[in-house]
Image (tube, rainbow over all chains, first blue to last red; front, side):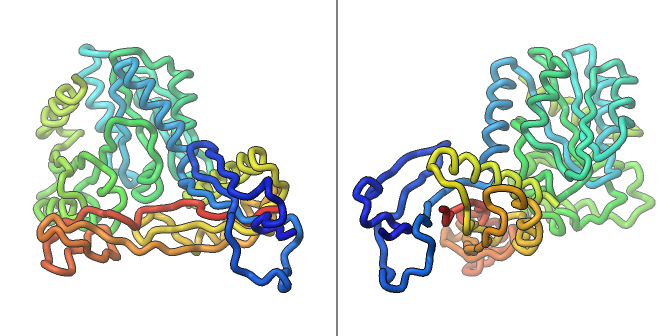
Length: 257
Length: 113
C-alpha cells in the first residue's frame, strides 16, 4: 500500500481528527507515481496547524483566567538590562503598598539580587533564575504564583529578564507588557528592537533627570515608538528622582480598577 | 536564543501527536515562518539537531515555508507588502500599517513513520 496517503487502506481515507485544538488530517489525495516509491512503507504525511508557541500560550491562558478570577492585575515589565525596572518597582511599592497587596516575580539568568531588593521593601518576591534561557515563560509563572501565594485583589509585577528580543514572544498571561527604556540608551531602540515595542501597550521613558547630560531626543524616540505601535501609551519619568512618577502610579491605579 | 525554547515546544508537540496518531518516528518537520516573526530560521536550523537528539525526531529533516508579510494600511485601506514592522504603506506612504500576515511561527506538516 502507499504509506504516505494510505490509499489502499480504506480505513485511513478521509480520517480527520482534532487534537489539542490543532487541525490534523491524514492526506487523502496523492499525485505521485506509485511505481516510483522510494519512501518506507509506513511513512505518511500529517498536516498540522499548530503554533510554535501553542504550549506557552495555553499556560498563559490559564494564568490569565486565574488572574481574572482572583482580580490580580499582572504586568510584564520588559527592557534591556539596566533600564531601571527593579528601581521602578521598588519606588512603585513604596508609594502603593499600603493601598493593595503587591507581589513580584523576578526573572534573571542568575542571582537573587533583584528579589532581595524587592523583599527589602516588605513585599513578597520570588526569584526565577532562568539559567541558559533568555526569557520567562508562562509555565514558570504559573508555578511561581503558587509558590508566592499571590493574594486576590492585588498587583503582581513580573520583571522579565533584561532582554529586548526574546521576551516579546512569550505571553505570560499579563494584562499588559510595559517596556522600560532609559535615556542613557539610544533613542532609536524602538526601531532597532521593533518586536518588543510592537508587543507592549505602555512605554516608560525612564531616567529623564539625566536628559541634560545625554544625547537622547525624546520626541524622536516617541515618533519611532509610534511608528512601530501607533497606540502605545508613553510615560516619561525618573524612578530614582521621582520626576513625574505619579503619572505611572496614577496609570496603575486607574488600570487596576 | 529563544529558538531553543521554541524547538523544545516543537519536540513536545511532536510527542503529543505521536501518542495520539500512533507513530514512532518523525522523518521531516515543516515549519511556516512569517517574515515579521521574531525568529531566525538559521538559528532554528542550527539548534534543531541538538534539541531533537534522543527524541522521536532525531535526525529528522527540517523544512521551512516562508510566509510573506502583508499589512492593512490605516491611511488608504489597501494591502501592502511589509519587510519590517514599521514599514510605511507602499501605495500612499502612510506610516501606520496593521499587520495581517507575517507574524506566524507554526508547524504545518510532518512526515512520520
